[in-house]
Length: 156
Image (cartoon, rainbow, N blue to C red; front, top):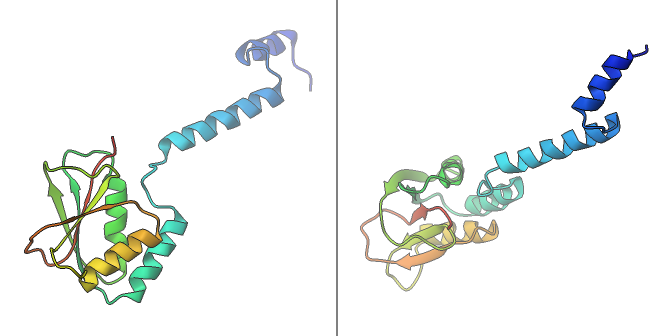
């Protein structure tokens, strides 16, 4: 099959002079760049999920509050994912939204009780996050919460 000269010239114009192979490579590169832009970097990778859930299953299911700062728009995906992982591991999970406060510079603050020794629930939460290599800061406060509270925030 042969293209007419007009069709060939039209393709060359549309491809900015690139060969079909060069055009294909450019399209693949653009698709890869788009895919990176669409991915939420705070959503856990399959490896992180495995590490996280492996540790949770080694602990007696407990009670946890998984919340996010209501003014933080970018952390909803990871907060929802972590909530689901706790639920699937048999934990009792509360979902809150908070407003204000001092956000963690790493995007996740855990509020625990003031005791010297971590409770079983606090230990399960911190060990699972550490195993999954999820950065967090801890704030020890007097609380009447039934368990530790995770507060996800955007990272500046």
